[in-house]
Each structure stands twice: as structure tokens, then as C-alpha cells.
Length: 106
Image 1 (spheres, rainbow, N blue to C red):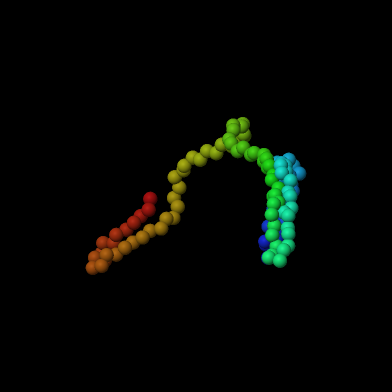
Image 2: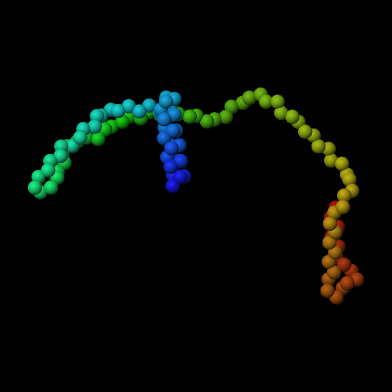
């Protein structure tokens, strides 16, 4: 319940900021009119009335790419041969334990 209330508050604050900054322009184009309500012995009837109409204009956001001069460092790596310990796997085949199969990583 708190999360729903927090989201509702954030939505209202965002709408207020958008209208205040001019990003959204809301204009009412038609007035609201209440319906004529009459009560008779058969029940209550409502006729007429008009809902309001609004015109909403929003700003636009354009996203794209451009070029700019940026100082970027250059890195150079020179390979050097060095001896390092690597794993070695020896597999003995069944019945031929005198000739193991060896994998030497290089």
C-alpha cells in the first residue's frame, strides 16, 4: 500500500513539474455542464450535460549523436615471453599404463 501511495505521489509531483516548466501545456476547450436531474415516481432520470474537453500540447525530446573532441589516453601493450606455471593433465588409458597421454599447454 505504501508503494502505491509513493508512486501516486511521484506521478503527481512529476505532472506538476512538467506543467510548471512549460513542458506540458493544458488548455480547456469546452466547459463542463451538469446534467438535468429529475426525480419522479418511476425513478431518477438524468439528461443533457457535457463533459469538459482539453487540448494538451507537449514538448519534444530529441536524442541523437554528434562529434566532439575528447582527450583519450592511448595504451600500448608489448607481448613478452615469460615462463609461467600452467596446468598439466596426464590421462592413463586402461591396459596401457606405460604410455600416458599428456597435454602440455604452451
